Image (cartoon, rainbow, N blue to C red; front, side, top):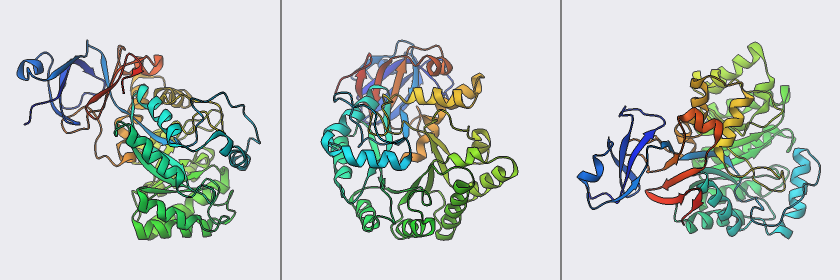
Length: 405
């Protein structure tokens, strides 16, 4: 083994797996965890390494934001009042009318959002990035530049997202495919019925790209009740038809919570058969998801911040722990096991959403560590304490709640 560059001493892992010590040291080599050893032993074995004293704090794996829009925000600018109609189409129209005057998107704007992610302990994100006839691929390029400006501290996986529709905007399918060639690992879709009003045509076009390029597909489905459930069936059918199991995700998917009883159970069975995952931002005033049945059935579930202070809504600050708490409250999670599970959904269990096979505080994992002054993981969720130390890819990027890069 090469000489480590950093040792983090005396931490209490929130999710101990193979080690089982109450307190441990992490030996970090490059951007990876090289050793997990009993507390107080690493610095003796590696006297040349830089040592960070964990002071007995609780250690979380870096948070993984599975649903973000880092290209849309006006974070860092003057306050922008909410306007426009409170419908999906109304939000799209309002954004299209005002984004240029606010300089959205921009590499600087995306970087400011990513910096807030880091400050709050998010070290990896899946971000939807608008691709449309007005922007072309500019937003994709801006977000790639922003991530590069931070030296990869936040690993960003892109979804080329057709926010303004697909079929109703001829030329967007070509742009989505070009975005994949530029580096997007996924393409998106949006309410095939409610927005494009032609679910068959939208899904045929999107799945054709998925089939030919190997890209993933992440569909925002807001349509509720029977209309939404009908589209879920169409998505499952096409996923199975092109062999895209494990590459398709539903975002929001309010219809699943709207559906009840046997109909819901049948949908869950088919979603699991298709290897389709799910991301939610736990919005208030929506029906809870059958989260326990989803996880027990093998349906991956991730949490995200959605847009942050953008032309869709004025809310959000990039703190994914707050989203995990909202998820817990929306779903009536009170006991210790469930509260810990909410945090797990925002950390280790979200690994696959950013193409990681494992994400935690184990040997071989990317060295993404968040220290908080908390009694346990439940306390960290409920109080949302300041992130005392954030290590991303093996380097310290935030200390005492403030960025160091």
